[in-house]
Every structure is written in C-alpha cells, then in structure tokens.
Image 1 (cartoon, rainbow, N blue to C red):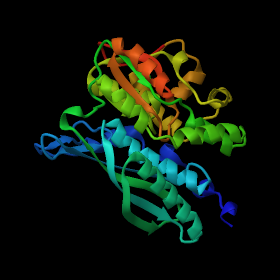
Image 2 (cartoon, helix red, strand yellow):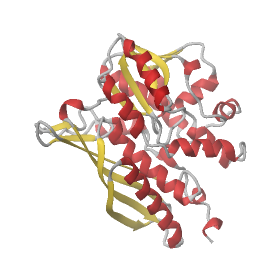
Image 3 (cartoon, rainbow, N blue to C red):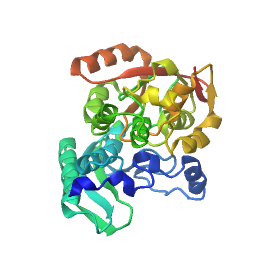
Image 4 (cartoon, rainbow, N blue to C red):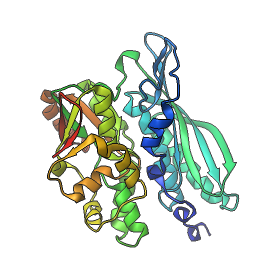
Length: 342
C-alpha cells in the first residue's frame, strides 16, 4: 500500500531547504564568464529568478527549472508543491507560464500508483497556472526528487527584476512565513497535523493571482521568497539594487504554529546555511530570536517579495483585500546598503 511509504523518510532534507548553500553558490559562480548576447535580457550578470531571452519587441521567453526531494509524505501534495515552486519563478519575473517538462528521479521500488499521483498533481497545477505539461525525463535514484523546467513569456519592457528597488519604496510579502519550521516540527513530533495542513495549503498556492493583482501597480522589484529565507532574498534584492532594505520584524507574517516552534528552538537544516549567506549583510536591532529564526527559515513555494512606491501601497493592500488575497507590508527601502532588521 502506498500509505505505508513515507516519502520524507527517503530524503535527507526536503523542499527548498535542500538548496545548495547560497554562499557557496556565490563563490562557485564567480568563475563563470557571463554570456554576451544582445537578446539575453536576464542571465548571470546579475542572476535572477529565471533567465529571460528576447524574441522581438513584443515577446521574451522566461526559462527556469526547480526540483527538490519530498517535503511532505502525500504524493499528490508533493507533486503539486514541487510544481508550484517551479512555476512561481515565472510569476516572480512578471510573466505567464507557457510550457513545462518534468524533472524526476525515483527509486524503482516506489509503487507506480504513487508516482502517478505525483505526476497527476503536478499536471493539475501546471494547467491551473495557464501552461501545459508536455513531457519530461525520469531517472533512477535512491532519493526521490521532482520538479519542473518551465518556459514562460513576458513583454521585454515588463520584466520584474529583483535589482530595481528604489529608496522610498515600500516592501510587501504575499504569503506568511514558516513552512520550514512547521515541517521540521512535524517530523520531530513537536506539532500536530493542523499547522502542517496550513503550511501545505500555502505551499500549494500559486503566485498567479498575487502577480496578476500586482501588475497594474508597476513594481520596481520582485522576487519570490524560497530556500534562502526572507533575509537571504531581501539581501539579494538590496545588494543588486544598490539600496538598504529596512525590515520591521514584528510585522513578519507567520503561518499559525510557526512562531511557537521557533520559540522552542526548532530550526531546519537550511537555517545555518542561510545564516552563513546573509548574516554578514544584516544589522539586527533589538529583535527577538523568534523573529530572527523566522527570517532565516527556508521557505518552499513562498510568496512574492515586492518593492514599489510607498504611495501606491495603501491602494495595493485594499485591492488585495477586495480580491481575498493575502499581503503584508513588512518594511521599506532607503539609500545605503545591506539589510536592517528592527
């Protein structure tokens, strides 16, 4: 029976916590020479949430891929979350997904009905995004891994970079934080199923509707909050924009149950890697260790981190409320460098 197999027990770590250390990635990519091509609008100089290639004055292709080991035990939830995480990179660039291919690695011993549930849930999520799942590649591996390569489209003059934040902007996030804390707490028997179910619902939520609501407000910078945590992605936005980001810790939204686990000392395997990457760029005021842990917590299929003119913020929040969507203002952008958490 498939219910006897717990997918998370087959993985050393799951979801975006399995990401390679951001600090080591920076060191590795220092040796790469950026590709020089007139139509490569976004590549490695600087890197962003996806690559973008200009086809003509009206169209550009967005290309991304993302995959990871199981983050939950239910095959359908795993397939949907992995698909959502990959598709959200396209929404973070301001585009619309067009086509996806599966990237899969599974032990041959896994029941075929379990794999079928993973693929079916991913296909459903791809269709919900407006795209089509058109095939893929599957190999044998002792540790399960699943994700997508995704192609999307965007107007060349409407790309959302993470490098465009400006002094005077307000900073928003479109999902609460804490997926890593909750999943780790559940695996260690420190929390019940309700927080896990709440985290799973958020991880299954595409950023499609949030991106659609943000688009008329012409944001200066957008990225999605995933494996490097809020602090890591805020640092990326600040450093690439040449600004200082100020975060108000007590405004950090948390999934119910996440802060209790942080107070108990729960941390994910990705927490120390995120601290190694971002801590030297952070200035911490008198901030509770609980909120510091939330800021470093690696997120899987997290929300959008959005920087836009502060005067547009109240209307944006009102529009999100009218649509029944979540949003929270968590900070601002100033002249300077680094990230201040107060």
